[in-house]
Length: 132
Length: 132
DNA sequence: GTAATTTTGGTAATTAATTACTTGAATTAC
DNA sequence: GTAATTCAAGTAATTAATTACCAAAATTAC
Image 1 (tube, chains in turn red, purple, orange, green):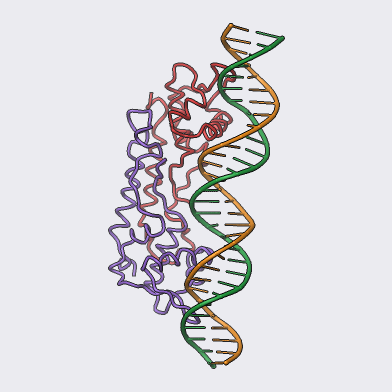
Image 2 (image 1 turned 60 degrees about the vertical axis):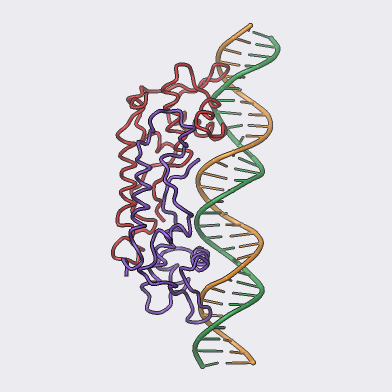
C-alpha cells in the first residue's frame, strides 16, 4: 500500500517550530514552542531532537538555553524540514498500487497525485526566510 | 489539532470495493474483494460490515453469498462511501487551529485547504455509475 | 438433514503516532 | 561550588489503524 501525503502533527510541529526559532530574538525552548503550537512538550522534544540530529538546529542546555538555527534561514527549505520528520515524499496516486488495481482508469483521477505534488512543490519553493 | 484529509487503506477498500460490487455480474464476496484490492480479508470484512450497516450494501450469507448494492449506482455518491468510513470531511487549512497559530499568515498558504476541497469535490461529483 | 460456504461479531495482536514520565548530563546564575 | 534550568535519552502508556483468529449464525447445495 502506498501512502497519500498529509500533514501530521509531528510535521506541523517541525515546520512551525523552526519558524518560531528563526523569528526568535532570544533562544526558543521546548516549553515555549509547545505553548505556541498547542502541542505536548514531550512531542516537541522528540521532534526537535530529530531536527538537531539532522543538523537544522543547535541545542543549548541550561537556563536561558534552547535552540538556534544551524544555517541561515534562506538556506533551509521547508521541504527538507518536512522530510526530516516524515521521510521522503513519494508521489503516488492511490493506496492501491498500479499493478494491483483492478480498474483501467484510476478512480481518484489523479486528484490524490495532484494533492501530493502541490504539497511537495509548495514546501520545496519556500525557505524559512519567507516567514521571518 | 485538525486533521488534514488523506486517503487511508480503509477508505480505499470502501471506494474500490463498492465499484467491484457494482460491476459484478454475480455476487462479490470478501475474499474476491480482498484479492482484487490487495488487502487482508479481515480488513475488507470490517469495512464491509460498516457499509452494510450504513445501507450501501446488502449481505447474503452461505455459499454463493456475498454483497449486492442496496441502491442504484447513480444514486451512490463516492463522497458518501468515503464519509461512511472516515466520518464527515472537515475542511481545514492546517493541523494548528487558527486560534492557536502564532503566525499572521498560514505557512501552508491554503495548499492543504485546497487539497481537502479538491479531494472532497472529486468524490462529491462522482457516483458508482461513473465507474461501471 | 448434512456439509460446506459466507457473513457477523468479538477478541486480540501488531504497528505507528502521540503523550507521559523519569533519570541523567550540560550549562547558567548566583 | 550549589542550585536551578534545559536538553537528551530511554521507557512506557495511550490511541487508532490494521491484521489475525475464532466461534456463531445464516444460507446454499447436495
